[in-house]
Image 1 (tube, rainbow, N blue to C red):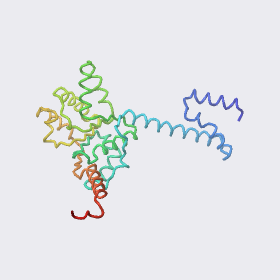
Image 2 (spheres, helix red, strand yellow):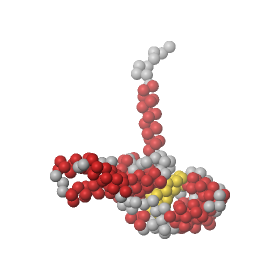
Image 3 (tube, rainbow, N blue to C red):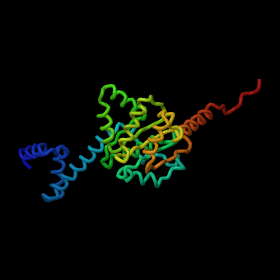
Image 4 (cartoon, rainbow, N blue to C red):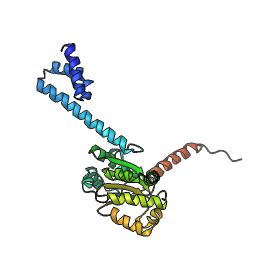
Length: 265
């Protein structure tokens, strides 16, 4: 291909916003010559690469905008450390049917059992399916709403949170809210009822949720909405982090134990 033609082709590709192809054009041309591709096969290969790159870029953008604290997937979860977990249910949730049905997921359990990992993994799976996702701690969401109310734009923030396809509220109950924060968070969750799914991780049973929201009537109304058609997963196995710490401590103790006892004095 003449250099002038290649330059014009690159310019046309840029104008058509096929930027992913521009950087690999020389490779495509070389491969087409070597394999004897016809024009149709060449165009198909070029467009397939462009489309695949766009899919990957959209996924990266959704994951970035979700604001996961750590990027963890369901594939990297240690299922052997969670003997009570229903893997069939996890794989079913990974397909995203619960999102289309606007069902919620509530993960109960002590610290270190992998609730946040599971919630993050499901959030990443939702991003892969083109679902806009937001990950935030319960306390972080409450504080964000309080700040928005002080700036007189809380309605805009609530609308933005309501519009996202999946809201992940992590560590709900670890830190109690103010009355104002509890009421605003209730408003968000009420707005999302049967409009968008919520994943919640918490260390408190339902009976103790008044410790979070303070008002018993408000808490009962919230639970009524959240548990409607919800998948409830009890993460009641041993803490993964605690087990790893104990293993490390045991190894350290063995190393410090002298191989030969000191003679009596």
